[in-house]
Length: 380
Image (cartoon, rainbow, N blue to C red; front, side, top):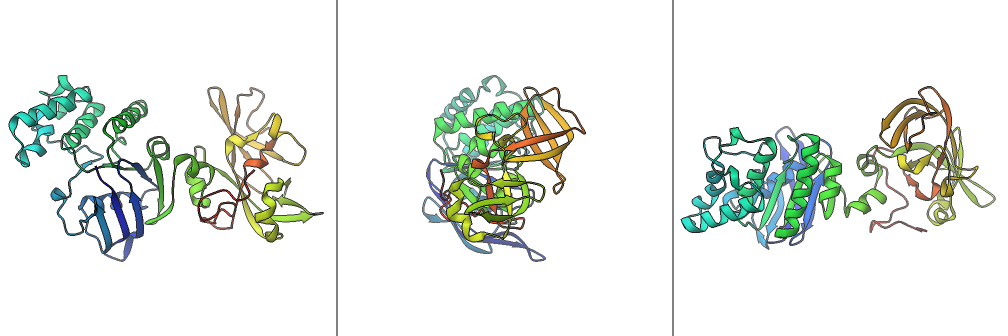
């Protein structure tokens, strides 16, 4: 396998559409990295640039230390799995998997050995004589992965390979891909629009928007220490709640004033927020860090928010409450099932103030409690 390095790569389409803007990224040997973001964020274009299916406007792409800007796709020693699988309909599974090796003039015996070995690994041995039209979506996906594996390339590229599968099969294939990566130790770049998929598969997660990387870090770090408001709102289901307000100080104690409620901030925020007294800020809190029946860290008189429930979504042992305050029309709280809660009811939420974040105003406002190294400032 090999390292893959992107150095200030840029791709601009006709009409001045900047699909990828000055992106730099290093994928280390054997790493599984996921690119995630909303439609049009540049993740698939970035992958196609690595594959050689799109031409760079500027910058460099290195695979195993070699600049491949002018190297044709077939000579980059990478394998790509597409969203639609791109299997040859007139060929059997065996011939689909063997095709790339035949083009490279591998001996017939070696081709047969590799195809059957990979088919056993993916549990598709009994499908080798079938054609793609006779296969289910999950089986076609395995064949497409197998066709990539038999080549033993320096890097694997996946472009939303699970998006055509149903929800249950997606979860199963996610687990299979994770096991496969552990077994092969393959350098992998994986593109998806599904942030849950990105978080469960990636050693690191790259969050993109408008052709720019907004954060690249381990999944838990992206979730717990989002670099800005966009990342915080994109990663997580349901998404993080955002409350507009301003910082106040009374007798040396910091508060966040939401308009209808005032929240006392833990001392760990003093160092980074004390100089911002009087400023407009955005407080972020995840749905699971709010509770209707406070216990432990949620309890207290200074972290309460009176709300009206607009909708209740039951999710087995949990429920999502869509609520309104006097200043905010839509917040979501994930709580234990409580049959006494119903649409239109007034209730009080209790916030875990140890877990809140503070962002500068704007859709991409910086998380002021995370430093440039992606670490929490003054963390408890």
